[in-house]
Amino acid sequence: MSTKINVRSPYFLQFTEPTQTLGVFTCDTALLQNFSVDSTGIINNPNIRNGAILDQSAYTFSPNTGTSVIPRSVTYTIAIPVNYTNSNDSTIDCVQTFDQPVRPPAQDPAQNPLCPTYTGVTVPDISGVAPSSVQTFNASQFFVAGTDGIGSIDVDRISGSGSVIASTSGTHPNIICTIQSSTSCVTAEFFLIARGNSTTCKGGSDSFTFTTSGCDDFDCDDANITAGTGRIEQDGTVHKSTWGLGGLGLNKLLYGATDITTSLNVGANNTGSVIPIVLTYRFNIPLGYTNSGTFDCDVTYSQPATTTLPEFTCGDAQITGTYISDSGNIAAPSLTLGTLVSWSPQSFLQVSTDTPRTITLTITPPPANFSNSGGANITCPVDITQPAKQADCGTITVFLSQGYSSVQDICYEQQAGRYWQTSNQVSTNASSAAAARYEYGSRMCYGTTPVFGLNRWYVITTTQTTGDALYNFYAIQIDENGIVQDSVIWNCGSVTGGSGGNI
Image (cartoon, rainbow, N blue to C red; front, side):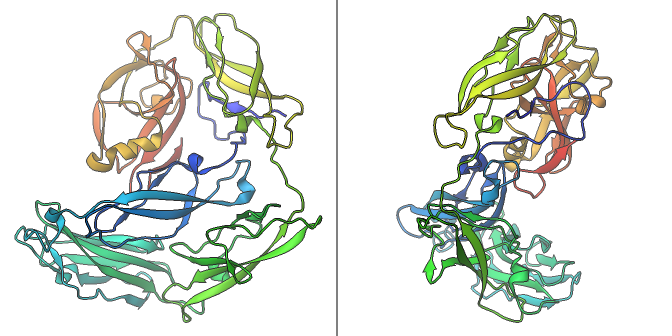
Protein backbone atom coordinates (compact mmCIF):
# COMPACT_ATOMS: atom_id res chain seq x y z
CA MET A 1 0.00 0.00 0.00
CA SER A 2 1.15 3.54 -0.66
CA THR A 3 0.34 6.68 1.31
CA LYS A 4 1.53 10.11 0.22
CA ILE A 5 3.53 12.05 2.81
CA ASN A 6 3.74 15.70 1.85
CA VAL A 7 6.64 17.95 2.84
CA ARG A 8 4.94 20.74 0.97
CA SER A 9 6.62 22.79 -1.71
CA PRO A 10 6.84 24.20 -4.26
CA TYR A 11 5.76 27.53 -4.56
CA PHE A 12 2.22 28.59 -3.75
CA LEU A 13 -0.58 27.81 -1.35
CA GLN A 14 -2.53 24.62 -1.95
CA PHE A 15 -6.08 24.66 -0.60
CA THR A 16 -6.44 20.87 -0.40
CA GLU A 17 -4.07 18.30 1.00
CA PRO A 18 -4.02 14.51 0.56
CA THR A 19 -5.54 12.46 3.35
CA GLN A 20 -2.76 10.98 5.44
CA THR A 21 -2.79 8.10 7.87
CA LEU A 22 -1.04 9.34 10.98
CA GLY A 23 -0.37 6.14 12.92
CA VAL A 24 -1.71 5.16 16.36
CA PHE A 25 -2.96 8.02 18.54
CA THR A 26 -1.60 7.69 22.08
CA CYS A 27 -1.24 9.94 25.11
CA ASP A 28 2.25 10.70 23.83
CA THR A 29 0.67 11.82 20.54
CA ALA A 30 -1.75 14.09 22.42
CA LEU A 31 1.30 15.62 24.13
CA LEU A 32 -0.29 17.14 27.19
CA GLN A 33 2.09 19.72 28.68
CA ASN A 34 2.29 22.22 31.55
CA PHE A 35 -0.23 20.53 33.85
CA SER A 36 0.09 21.74 37.42
CA VAL A 37 -1.81 22.24 40.67
CA ASP A 38 -0.96 25.25 42.83
CA SER A 39 -0.87 25.31 46.60
CA THR A 40 -4.44 26.62 46.81
CA GLY A 41 -5.78 23.69 44.73
CA ILE A 42 -6.29 25.56 41.47
CA ILE A 43 -5.63 23.30 38.45
CA ASN A 44 -3.70 24.62 35.49
CA ASN A 45 -5.10 22.45 32.71
CA PRO A 46 -2.47 21.16 30.29
CA ASN A 47 -1.82 22.41 26.78
CA ILE A 48 -2.73 19.74 24.23
CA ARG A 49 -0.97 19.51 20.86
CA ASN A 50 -3.24 16.95 19.14
CA GLY A 51 -6.83 15.95 19.80
CA ALA A 52 -9.36 17.75 21.99
CA ILE A 53 -10.07 17.42 25.71
CA LEU A 54 -13.64 16.14 26.07
CA ASP A 55 -13.87 15.83 29.85
CA GLN A 56 -11.72 15.68 32.98
CA SER A 57 -12.10 13.92 36.32
CA ALA A 58 -11.55 16.99 38.55
CA TYR A 59 -11.41 20.78 38.26
CA THR A 60 -10.15 21.85 41.69
CA PHE A 61 -8.47 20.37 44.76
CA SER A 62 -8.37 21.47 48.38
CA PRO A 63 -5.57 23.83 49.47
CA ASN A 64 -2.42 22.09 50.72
CA THR A 65 -2.11 23.45 54.24
CA GLY A 66 0.07 20.56 55.41
CA THR A 67 3.83 20.15 55.63
CA SER A 68 4.54 18.00 52.55
CA VAL A 69 3.51 17.86 48.91
CA ILE A 70 0.32 16.03 47.93
CA PRO A 71 0.29 13.94 44.71
CA ARG A 72 -2.65 15.01 42.55
CA SER A 73 -3.98 13.29 39.40
CA VAL A 74 -6.53 14.30 36.79
CA THR A 75 -7.77 11.97 34.06
CA TYR A 76 -8.42 13.73 30.75
CA THR A 77 -10.72 12.09 28.19
CA ILE A 78 -9.45 13.07 24.74
CA ALA A 79 -11.30 12.80 21.44
CA ILE A 80 -9.03 11.13 18.85
CA PRO A 81 -8.75 13.14 15.61
CA VAL A 82 -9.53 11.57 12.23
CA ASN A 83 -6.88 9.86 10.07
CA TYR A 84 -5.19 8.04 12.95
CA THR A 85 -5.24 4.26 12.64
CA ASN A 86 -7.19 4.02 15.91
CA SER A 87 -9.65 6.84 15.12
CA ASN A 88 -12.51 4.34 15.47
CA ASP A 89 -11.58 4.05 19.17
CA SER A 90 -12.99 7.61 19.40
CA THR A 91 -11.49 8.48 22.79
CA ILE A 92 -8.46 7.86 24.96
CA ASP A 93 -7.96 8.55 28.68
CA CYS A 94 -4.70 10.21 29.70
CA VAL A 95 -3.69 10.77 33.33
CA GLN A 96 -1.70 13.83 34.38
CA THR A 97 0.00 13.95 37.78
CA PHE A 98 1.58 16.75 39.78
CA ASP A 99 2.87 17.20 43.35
CA GLN A 100 0.77 19.99 44.82
CA PRO A 101 3.16 22.20 46.80
CA VAL A 102 2.63 23.30 50.38
CA ARG A 103 1.14 26.77 50.61
CA PRO A 104 3.99 29.01 51.85
CA PRO A 105 3.33 31.32 54.80
CA ALA A 106 3.74 34.36 52.53
CA GLN A 107 0.68 33.25 50.52
CA ASP A 108 -1.42 32.29 53.54
CA PRO A 109 -3.78 35.10 54.64
CA ALA A 110 -3.78 33.64 58.16
CA GLN A 111 0.00 34.17 58.42
CA ASN A 112 0.57 37.15 56.16
CA PRO A 113 -1.44 40.34 56.81
CA LEU A 114 -0.60 41.60 53.31
CA CYS A 115 -2.89 39.00 51.70
CA PRO A 116 -6.54 39.49 50.69
CA THR A 117 -9.01 37.15 52.40
CA TYR A 118 -12.22 35.55 51.17
CA THR A 119 -15.09 36.56 53.48
CA GLY A 120 -16.69 33.12 53.31
CA VAL A 121 -19.95 34.60 52.06
CA THR A 122 -21.32 32.32 49.34
CA VAL A 123 -21.23 33.77 45.85
CA PRO A 124 -24.83 33.22 44.70
CA ASP A 125 -25.66 31.14 41.64
CA ILE A 126 -27.24 33.02 38.75
CA SER A 127 -29.94 31.02 36.99
CA GLY A 128 -32.87 31.43 34.63
CA VAL A 129 -31.17 34.27 32.76
CA ALA A 130 -32.63 35.15 29.38
CA PRO A 131 -30.10 34.63 26.55
CA SER A 132 -28.01 37.79 25.85
CA SER A 133 -29.12 39.37 29.12
CA VAL A 134 -26.09 40.92 30.85
CA GLN A 135 -25.72 40.18 34.56
CA THR A 136 -23.39 42.12 36.88
CA PHE A 137 -22.42 42.02 40.55
CA ASN A 138 -19.77 43.60 42.77
CA ALA A 139 -17.01 40.99 43.22
CA SER A 140 -15.26 43.15 45.84
CA GLN A 141 -17.96 42.36 48.42
CA PHE A 142 -16.63 38.80 48.79
CA PHE A 143 -13.10 39.76 49.87
CA VAL A 144 -11.40 41.70 52.64
CA ALA A 145 -8.24 43.54 51.65
CA GLY A 146 -4.98 42.87 53.48
CA THR A 147 -2.52 45.63 54.22
CA ASP A 148 -1.34 45.37 50.60
CA GLY A 149 -4.84 46.14 49.35
CA ILE A 150 -6.56 44.36 46.45
CA GLY A 151 -5.03 44.95 43.04
CA SER A 152 -7.38 42.77 41.01
CA ILE A 153 -10.17 40.23 41.19
CA ASP A 154 -10.32 37.73 38.34
CA VAL A 155 -13.19 35.40 37.41
CA ASP A 156 -11.89 31.97 36.39
CA ARG A 157 -13.88 29.23 34.63
CA ILE A 158 -14.03 25.83 36.32
CA SER A 159 -16.19 24.06 33.74
CA GLY A 160 -19.15 24.39 31.44
CA SER A 161 -20.11 26.00 28.16
CA GLY A 162 -17.60 28.27 26.46
CA SER A 163 -20.52 30.40 25.25
CA VAL A 164 -20.75 31.88 28.75
CA ILE A 165 -18.45 34.91 28.86
CA ALA A 166 -17.33 36.37 32.19
CA SER A 167 -14.96 39.27 32.94
CA THR A 168 -14.16 41.82 35.63
CA SER A 169 -13.47 45.55 35.48
CA GLY A 170 -12.94 48.49 37.80
CA THR A 171 -10.91 48.95 40.98
CA HIS A 172 -11.48 47.80 44.54
CA PRO A 173 -13.89 48.25 46.31
CA ASN A 174 -15.96 48.34 43.13
CA ILE A 175 -14.63 45.55 40.94
CA ILE A 176 -17.60 44.51 38.82
CA CYS A 177 -18.07 41.01 37.40
CA THR A 178 -19.99 40.92 34.10
CA ILE A 179 -21.36 37.62 32.81
CA GLN A 180 -23.65 36.63 29.94
CA SER A 181 -24.39 34.12 27.18
CA SER A 182 -26.37 34.43 23.95
CA THR A 183 -27.19 30.70 24.02
CA SER A 184 -30.24 29.22 25.73
CA CYS A 185 -29.98 26.41 28.29
CA VAL A 186 -26.23 26.52 28.94
CA THR A 187 -24.35 26.39 32.24
CA ALA A 188 -20.85 27.31 33.34
CA GLU A 189 -19.15 27.26 36.73
CA PHE A 190 -16.72 29.94 37.92
CA PHE A 191 -14.89 31.21 41.01
CA LEU A 192 -13.29 34.51 41.96
CA ILE A 193 -9.60 35.10 42.77
CA ALA A 194 -8.44 38.26 44.55
CA ARG A 195 -4.79 39.32 44.41
CA GLY A 196 -2.82 41.89 46.38
CA ASN A 197 -1.34 44.95 44.71
CA SER A 198 2.28 43.84 44.89
CA THR A 199 2.39 40.40 46.52
CA THR A 200 1.86 36.85 45.31
CA CYS A 201 -0.96 36.46 47.83
CA LYS A 202 -4.34 35.44 46.51
CA GLY A 203 -7.66 34.43 47.96
CA GLY A 204 -10.24 32.28 46.18
CA SER A 205 -14.01 32.24 46.64
CA ASP A 206 -16.31 29.26 46.53
CA SER A 207 -17.69 28.34 43.11
CA PHE A 208 -20.85 29.71 41.54
CA THR A 209 -22.82 28.82 38.44
CA PHE A 210 -24.46 30.80 35.64
CA THR A 211 -27.34 29.26 33.70
CA THR A 212 -29.48 30.64 30.90
CA SER A 213 -33.17 29.88 30.56
CA GLY A 214 -34.85 27.69 27.97
CA CYS A 215 -34.15 24.27 29.52
CA ASP A 216 -36.51 21.34 29.93
CA ASP A 217 -35.80 17.86 31.31
CA PHE A 218 -32.27 16.64 30.61
CA ASP A 219 -32.17 13.47 28.50
CA CYS A 220 -29.83 11.50 26.25
CA ASP A 221 -30.40 13.89 23.36
CA ASP A 222 -28.79 16.60 25.51
CA ALA A 223 -25.90 14.29 26.38
CA ASN A 224 -25.40 13.92 22.60
CA ILE A 225 -23.48 10.64 22.50
CA THR A 226 -22.12 10.44 18.96
CA ALA A 227 -23.52 7.47 17.07
CA GLY A 228 -20.97 5.03 15.69
CA THR A 229 -18.14 6.14 17.98
CA GLY A 230 -16.37 3.98 20.53
CA ARG A 231 -15.86 0.22 20.47
CA ILE A 232 -15.04 -2.83 22.61
CA GLU A 233 -12.11 -5.10 21.79
CA GLN A 234 -12.11 -8.91 21.99
CA ASP A 235 -10.11 -8.77 25.24
CA GLY A 236 -12.76 -6.52 26.80
CA THR A 237 -10.95 -3.19 26.46
CA VAL A 238 -13.49 -0.36 26.21
CA HIS A 239 -12.96 2.72 24.06
CA LYS A 240 -15.60 5.23 25.12
CA SER A 241 -17.85 7.00 22.65
CA THR A 242 -17.65 10.76 22.32
CA TRP A 243 -20.39 12.95 23.74
CA GLY A 244 -21.33 16.61 23.58
CA LEU A 245 -21.82 17.33 27.28
CA GLY A 246 -18.60 18.89 28.58
CA GLY A 247 -17.34 19.72 32.03
CA LEU A 248 -17.56 16.85 34.53
CA GLY A 249 -20.36 15.44 32.39
CA LEU A 250 -19.65 11.73 32.95
CA ASN A 251 -20.44 10.60 36.48
CA LYS A 252 -19.48 6.98 35.80
CA LEU A 253 -19.49 4.29 33.12
CA LEU A 254 -21.37 1.11 34.05
CA TYR A 255 -21.43 -2.42 32.70
CA GLY A 256 -24.55 -3.76 34.32
CA ALA A 257 -24.09 -2.82 37.96
CA THR A 258 -20.27 -2.74 37.71
CA ASP A 259 -18.48 0.60 37.61
CA ILE A 260 -15.84 0.33 34.86
CA THR A 261 -14.94 4.05 34.74
CA THR A 262 -11.37 3.28 35.76
CA SER A 263 -10.81 -0.27 34.49
CA LEU A 264 -12.48 0.34 31.09
CA ASN A 265 -12.82 -3.42 30.62
CA VAL A 266 -15.83 -5.75 30.35
CA GLY A 267 -13.94 -9.04 30.12
CA ALA A 268 -12.83 -11.06 27.10
CA ASN A 269 -15.27 -12.52 24.58
CA ASN A 270 -14.30 -16.20 24.31
CA THR A 271 -17.68 -17.40 23.01
CA GLY A 272 -16.52 -17.79 19.42
CA SER A 273 -19.08 -15.30 18.05
CA VAL A 274 -19.85 -11.59 18.21
CA ILE A 275 -21.88 -10.58 21.30
CA PRO A 276 -23.78 -7.38 22.13
CA ILE A 277 -22.53 -5.39 25.12
CA VAL A 278 -24.63 -2.63 26.70
CA LEU A 279 -22.76 0.11 28.56
CA THR A 280 -24.50 2.76 30.63
CA TYR A 281 -23.16 6.31 30.52
CA ARG A 282 -24.31 7.99 33.75
CA PHE A 283 -24.16 11.76 33.31
CA ASN A 284 -24.35 14.52 35.90
CA ILE A 285 -27.37 16.65 34.99
CA PRO A 286 -26.18 20.26 34.60
CA LEU A 287 -27.87 23.04 36.49
CA GLY A 288 -30.70 24.76 34.67
CA TYR A 289 -32.59 21.64 33.62
CA THR A 290 -35.93 20.90 35.25
CA ASN A 291 -34.63 17.55 36.54
CA SER A 292 -31.53 17.04 38.68
CA GLY A 293 -29.06 14.43 39.84
CA THR A 294 -27.85 11.94 37.22
CA PHE A 295 -29.26 10.50 34.00
CA ASP A 296 -28.43 7.14 32.39
CA CYS A 297 -27.92 6.61 28.67
CA ASP A 298 -27.42 3.07 27.31
CA VAL A 299 -25.22 2.37 24.30
CA THR A 300 -24.97 -1.07 22.66
CA TYR A 301 -21.67 -2.24 21.18
CA SER A 302 -20.70 -5.39 19.28
CA GLN A 303 -17.77 -7.16 20.94
CA PRO A 304 -15.86 -9.30 18.42
CA ALA A 305 -14.77 -12.86 19.15
CA THR A 306 -11.37 -12.42 17.54
CA THR A 307 -8.73 -9.76 17.91
CA THR A 308 -8.71 -7.25 15.06
CA LEU A 309 -5.26 -5.87 14.35
CA PRO A 310 -4.71 -2.57 12.54
CA GLU A 311 -2.96 -2.47 9.18
CA PHE A 312 0.59 -1.10 9.22
CA THR A 313 0.73 2.01 7.03
CA CYS A 314 3.20 4.73 6.11
CA GLY A 315 1.74 6.88 8.88
CA ASP A 316 2.61 4.22 11.47
CA ALA A 317 6.21 4.22 10.24
CA GLN A 318 6.44 7.91 11.26
CA ILE A 319 9.07 8.83 8.68
CA THR A 320 11.34 11.71 9.65
CA GLY A 321 14.65 13.17 8.55
CA THR A 322 14.22 12.81 4.78
CA TYR A 323 16.76 15.18 3.25
CA ILE A 324 18.30 15.96 -0.15
CA SER A 325 21.56 17.91 -0.23
CA ASP A 326 22.32 20.56 -2.85
CA SER A 327 24.57 17.93 -4.51
CA GLY A 328 21.56 15.60 -4.90
CA ASN A 329 22.59 13.07 -2.24
CA ILE A 330 19.74 11.56 -0.20
CA ALA A 331 20.19 11.00 3.53
CA ALA A 332 18.63 7.87 5.05
CA PRO A 333 15.39 8.81 6.83
CA SER A 334 14.46 7.56 10.30
CA LEU A 335 11.52 5.31 11.17
CA THR A 336 9.75 4.87 14.48
CA LEU A 337 8.22 1.53 13.39
CA GLY A 338 9.09 -0.90 10.63
CA THR A 339 12.39 -1.54 8.86
CA LEU A 340 13.70 0.61 6.03
CA VAL A 341 14.70 -1.68 3.15
CA SER A 342 15.66 0.84 0.48
CA TRP A 343 14.69 4.04 -1.24
CA SER A 344 14.48 5.06 -4.87
CA PRO A 345 16.14 6.80 -6.53
CA GLN A 346 19.42 6.68 -4.64
CA SER A 347 20.38 10.22 -5.66
CA PHE A 348 19.54 13.09 -8.01
CA LEU A 349 21.60 15.24 -10.35
CA GLN A 350 22.48 18.74 -9.21
CA VAL A 351 19.96 21.43 -10.15
CA SER A 352 20.24 25.16 -10.71
CA THR A 353 16.80 25.92 -9.23
CA ASP A 354 14.99 24.47 -6.27
CA THR A 355 13.24 21.37 -7.64
CA PRO A 356 10.40 19.24 -6.19
CA ARG A 357 11.32 15.56 -5.89
CA THR A 358 9.60 12.34 -4.83
CA ILE A 359 11.53 9.65 -2.99
CA THR A 360 9.87 6.22 -2.65
CA LEU A 361 10.74 4.28 0.50
CA THR A 362 10.32 0.51 0.78
CA ILE A 363 9.49 -0.52 4.34
CA THR A 364 8.98 -3.91 5.99
CA PRO A 365 6.10 -3.95 8.53
CA PRO A 366 6.96 -4.82 12.15
CA PRO A 367 6.94 -8.58 12.87
CA ALA A 368 3.87 -8.41 15.14
CA ASN A 369 0.83 -6.38 16.23
CA PHE A 370 -0.37 -5.44 12.72
CA SER A 371 -2.65 -7.30 10.30
CA ASN A 372 0.05 -7.21 7.62
CA SER A 373 2.92 -8.21 9.94
CA GLY A 374 5.00 -10.85 8.17
CA GLY A 375 3.47 -9.81 4.87
CA ALA A 376 4.67 -7.84 1.88
CA ASN A 377 6.68 -4.64 2.12
CA ILE A 378 4.84 -1.34 1.71
CA THR A 379 5.98 1.65 -0.35
CA CYS A 380 5.80 5.21 0.93
CA PRO A 381 6.36 8.18 -1.39
CA VAL A 382 7.82 11.27 0.30
CA ASP A 383 7.64 14.66 -1.45
CA ILE A 384 10.54 17.02 -0.73
CA THR A 385 12.40 19.85 -2.46
CA GLN A 386 15.97 19.47 -3.69
CA PRO A 387 17.79 22.78 -3.16
CA ALA A 388 19.72 24.43 -5.96
CA LYS A 389 23.51 24.08 -5.88
CA GLN A 390 23.73 27.86 -5.97
CA ALA A 391 21.02 29.04 -3.60
CA ASP A 392 18.67 31.71 -4.90
CA CYS A 393 18.35 33.99 -1.88
CA GLY A 394 16.54 36.82 -3.63
CA THR A 395 16.58 40.50 -2.72
CA ILE A 396 13.33 40.96 -0.78
CA THR A 397 13.82 41.79 2.92
CA VAL A 398 11.61 40.33 5.67
CA PHE A 399 12.09 39.73 9.39
CA LEU A 400 11.91 36.50 11.44
CA SER A 401 11.60 35.65 15.12
CA GLN A 402 13.55 32.93 16.87
CA GLY A 403 12.60 29.36 15.86
CA TYR A 404 9.99 27.28 17.73
CA SER A 405 9.49 23.51 17.64
CA SER A 406 5.80 23.99 16.81
CA VAL A 407 3.54 26.93 16.11
CA GLN A 408 1.80 26.25 19.43
CA ASP A 409 5.13 26.78 21.21
CA ILE A 410 4.97 30.44 20.24
CA CYS A 411 2.00 30.64 22.59
CA TYR A 412 3.70 28.66 25.35
CA GLU A 413 6.64 31.07 25.23
CA GLN A 414 4.24 33.98 25.68
CA GLN A 415 2.43 32.73 28.77
CA ALA A 416 4.24 35.28 30.89
CA GLY A 417 5.39 37.99 28.50
CA ARG A 418 2.82 37.59 25.67
CA TYR A 419 5.11 39.22 23.11
CA TRP A 420 7.21 37.98 20.18
CA GLN A 421 9.97 39.82 18.32
CA THR A 422 11.03 39.61 14.68
CA SER A 423 14.55 40.92 15.15
CA ASN A 424 16.34 38.78 12.50
CA GLN A 425 16.60 40.41 9.06
CA VAL A 426 16.66 37.92 6.19
CA SER A 427 16.44 38.01 2.40
CA THR A 428 13.98 35.93 0.38
CA ASN A 429 13.25 35.02 -3.23
CA ALA A 430 9.49 35.28 -2.61
CA SER A 431 7.58 37.41 -5.09
CA SER A 432 7.08 40.16 -2.50
CA ALA A 433 7.56 40.81 1.22
CA ALA A 434 3.83 40.31 1.84
CA ALA A 435 3.78 37.07 -0.21
CA ALA A 436 6.72 35.70 1.80
CA ARG A 437 4.25 35.10 4.65
CA TYR A 438 2.45 32.36 2.71
CA GLU A 439 4.47 31.41 -0.38
CA TYR A 440 5.50 27.74 -0.06
CA GLY A 441 8.80 26.87 -1.68
CA SER A 442 10.35 30.32 -1.33
CA ARG A 443 13.75 30.52 0.39
CA MET A 444 14.93 32.49 3.43
CA CYS A 445 18.60 33.48 3.72
CA TYR A 446 20.98 35.34 5.97
CA GLY A 447 22.71 37.27 3.21
CA THR A 448 23.58 34.53 0.72
CA THR A 449 23.44 31.66 3.25
CA PRO A 450 20.16 29.74 3.53
CA VAL A 451 18.52 29.79 6.95
CA PHE A 452 19.16 26.41 8.62
CA GLY A 453 15.55 26.21 9.75
CA LEU A 454 15.43 22.63 11.15
CA ASN A 455 11.68 22.54 10.27
CA ARG A 456 11.00 24.99 13.08
CA TRP A 457 8.34 27.72 13.06
CA TYR A 458 9.16 31.42 12.79
CA VAL A 459 6.97 34.49 13.16
CA ILE A 460 7.42 36.54 9.96
CA THR A 461 6.79 40.27 9.40
CA THR A 462 7.59 42.79 6.70
CA THR A 463 9.16 45.19 9.23
CA GLN A 464 11.10 44.64 12.46
CA THR A 465 8.27 44.24 14.95
CA THR A 466 7.38 43.39 18.54
CA GLY A 467 3.91 41.84 18.55
CA ASP A 468 1.28 40.78 21.05
CA ALA A 469 0.73 37.01 20.77
CA LEU A 470 -2.93 37.38 21.73
CA TYR A 471 -3.61 38.81 18.28
CA ASN A 472 -3.18 37.33 14.79
CA PHE A 473 0.34 36.85 13.46
CA TYR A 474 1.88 35.00 10.51
CA ALA A 475 4.24 32.07 11.06
CA ILE A 476 6.17 29.94 8.55
CA GLN A 477 7.97 26.59 8.81
CA ILE A 478 11.50 26.54 7.36
CA ASP A 479 13.58 23.44 6.53
CA GLU A 480 17.35 22.85 6.61
CA ASN A 481 17.77 24.56 3.23
CA GLY A 482 15.86 27.69 4.14
CA ILE A 483 12.81 26.60 2.12
CA VAL A 484 9.34 27.48 3.42
CA GLN A 485 7.32 24.28 3.97
CA ASP A 486 4.15 25.57 5.63
CA SER A 487 2.45 28.77 6.80
CA VAL A 488 -0.36 29.73 9.18
CA ILE A 489 -2.17 32.69 10.65
CA TRP A 490 -2.23 32.15 14.43
CA ASN A 491 -3.08 33.82 17.71
CA CYS A 492 -2.67 32.73 21.30
CA GLY A 493 -5.92 34.30 22.51
CA SER A 494 -7.77 32.41 25.22
CA VAL A 495 -7.55 29.00 23.51
CA THR A 496 -5.06 26.51 24.94
CA GLY A 497 -2.06 26.43 22.61
CA GLY A 498 -3.54 29.13 20.39
CA SER A 499 -5.76 28.86 17.36
CA GLY A 500 -5.48 29.39 13.63
CA GLY A 501 -5.00 27.54 10.40
CA ASN A 502 -3.21 27.21 7.10
CA ILE A 503 -3.29 30.16 4.73
